[in-house]
Length: 270
Ligand code: DGL
Image 1: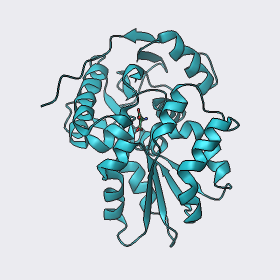
Image 2: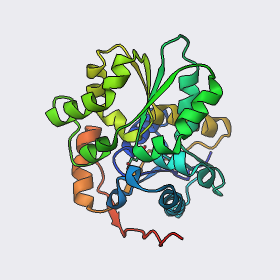
Image 3: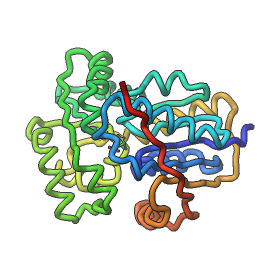
Image 4: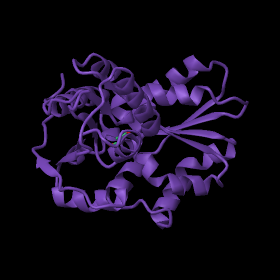
């Protein structure tokens, strides 16, 4: 029994896909959720900045006395895996479990990965997947507009702006006959219906958030570290009111108001 909360952080609403997945598996846990919206999109940042941000976000969430942390951000997971793994509270990114899930799909069709520009540039998703299934063709695509669109309220599958962006970034995947596609950015689950429709409902979409939530719930259950009252406390850098409104829309229910926290500075990098 361990009633300490679980921490989840991301640059923004993408973290909600991890929160939803974890809640489904662990309804009684207390969760500290941090959306660093004032500094989004992380995908446009350098690897050096992302390493600093990873540590700052981990430390912020850890300050609430959490028992484990999910870095619910593919971009941080791909660019600062050692910062996450070496943190003094058990912490996991969304890369390893999602890549492991992808690697077990049988067949000859190429495996697809979509993620932010910084994630794709790091080469981490592709390298880790290639190590687990050498010889299998892997196609990757960076989708730099997706996060900005979602953060600004464009996430409906009927929204023409979303549909146009999905077609732009996924045309090559569709033409290559990808049958399994990793959503390597946690935001992308919020437009999965638009992606699924464009791909004609024929492609399995693998959510990095869901894979990781499952692994964390197993880890906590196996080590007897479960317990709580099912409470979620939200924190955001940026407007709490905007966060509350959009998060409620994305979650499909009102939330206990978020607390707005000061924006953390990234010191000049040498
Ligand atoms: N949701 C994050 C990810 O999984 C961050 C996206 C961003 O801020 O660019 O990559």
